Length: 289
Image (cartoon, rainbow, N blue to C red):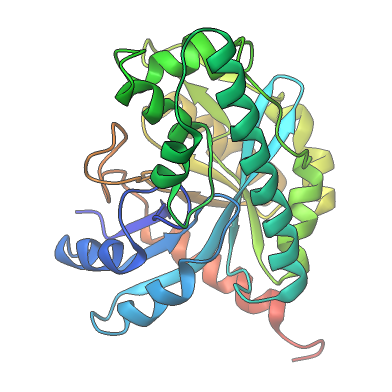
């Protein structure tokens, strides 16, 4: 039985559950440790931490930063970040505000292409969370322009789609530095992209990129993830051993009505959490302490 999920989203970004609802649901599944890792936002962390006290559930404050590379958008997780650091919040706000302008331009392009949707509806779908392409996709679905949300990315708002608009740039190295600046541990999120047909893509060559990323302060690799086969996990575990990196994992949960994996459905060994907490403790320990 799995007791850990280190990759969860709430309505603070593009999840379907509020932080309180996520915590209660995790507790109902007998999970013991979760991490709240919303996209470019920590606005759900404090609420989740407060609610978790009622259930004896451990919540690790986290974030998932979106990074642009030539081949697409990759993500960098941050664990044990300071959710209220002013400079950190200013940077997250800049990234989120860039998302709003991006969504507005995508809506305009879709209208020009003959597939009109309401930006107001995109805002409603995003709520108080970080606005993103999933909200645009949902608006397209509701308007009857597509049969499912995946079609939105395939036809319109994927990297090579006619309505795609680049987002404010944050490089993987910049993301590592940003997480470290607030006492967090940066972890390369789902380094392999495994599609439903089983094909695998590396947005950046993982092995070749690790020397630079570890030199910048990368702390770990997410090795346990939906659709990962043993070969994917084994390769990431080998790279983690080679570079002295931590290992994490999780479901990338977005809600019970989401098409993604169920909360707690990806087995994450307890030793991953133990090592993560030990590394955090060591990083904040005073010199000579």
